[in-house]
Length: 429
Image (cartoon, rainbow, N blue to C red; front, side, top):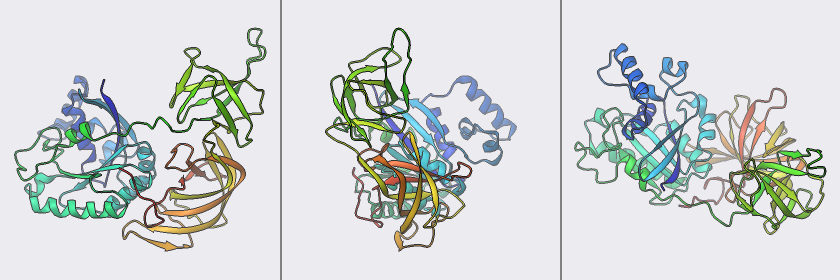
């Protein structure tokens, strides 16, 4: 059975990202015949001599009309060696917030640059976002290599600039690979190109098939954010009380000792129910209902966790945020924080450092965070939240900041996560 790789693509506008994704789908035979026929007809209508593979992925009418990707779209394809889930994220700076969403679960990021333009401001911004989210490996696809006559020197300059930038973001040697490609013509995407004899590395697809994927650690502490308390009160189940939610980390078994956070009350797992019937154990990603041995006061937003590895219950959050709103963030702002299944009121007590992704420097105690800026913040919440460090558990170590008036998402926050210039953390490989 092939294993799974989750990856995200990112790149500036007109770098050819949609064409590259379309090429991957086409070359792995992941496109239905009627889809390809529709693309070929649309390409002919546009006066093109070859199919425009970007039309396979730019599904929204506004995307097709503007020639840009707007929303995150998930693409699924497979080879005999591996199955892939690809988050196709927007390139335009206006939609950086969507890139954060798409990259949040990625194990590898594919960044595109145009060989004629090299590393751009948005390239550096995307690299910083991927580093902040802890995406452990990067591929730099130097696209449109055919438009610079397959020039080795051009590729070498771009590759060196980007790998140096990535190293300063915390990526170790070996975690970044640069590949010269032509998405339009297929050079070095799925098949090696005879036009780049100076490149001896793998094709993009070969790398995606063989790059090591760290397995989910078996010792990750169990976490179940409670979504709903089930009390059927029927003749068959007069005393049934179940706590339903999606298991975000670890494994839970019948008989396990658990703790409820933030109350700290302890109990034992008596039963694990699912839509398919009871199970003796359940692992991360499964939607379950736990029945505990004791009658405890548990409500939506609480977390049922491993009694031997208890999350921290705190009303003081020290986090790195990516600000996603045109409205600036300033100290003293009153916001809502959504963590897991719980939403609470909060106040921004301090802005620590603002990260300059272009120069890899920081600004101490900035007056505000503007759209797409990354910085350290401290928040005080109205109620304690059961949190983990982002490096331990991304689900219970992350949150979003919401505008109380209209419910708009203002920022993505990562508890304890940082970049080298903002602290001392580094990415693992």
